Amino acid sequence: MTPTGRFIILGGKWPAVHTHREITRLEIEAVSEALKVLKRDTRVVTNLHIHIDNTAAKAGIQRDYSPSFEVNSALHRLAVATKNSSFLISDVSYVNTKLNPADHPSRGRFDPAPIIALLKTLHPDVCNFVNDRIG
Image (cartoon, rainbow, N blue to C red; front, top):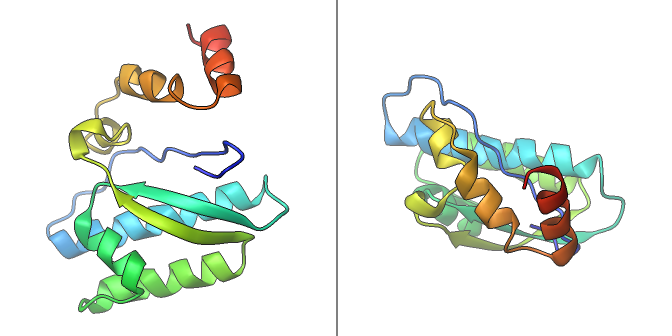
């Protein structure tokens, strides 16, 4: 979420993956994709606070390094996406998987209730939008 209230929740079913490294790589690539989406809507330098439920991805983003070649490749792409955007990653926080609104879609399930509950806790304008559009 940006200080101006812009946010993106990426949630979609992951492809079949077999290792923790693959999941970590995909999580970091999702952050890169989020930057590309947000870049279209933001013209000024903005601090970005990332919430992620993968501790290896969190550590990699914070250190800009991973012992895994695959994860380092994703971190490099994230660094390029950050450099080519107007965002500075100001903080990376762990969010418990049970509280992560993108978790259910990543497992092929979708329950909008956690996302709606999260949106209603944000900026009053977001809350009003959610109430007007979703209920």
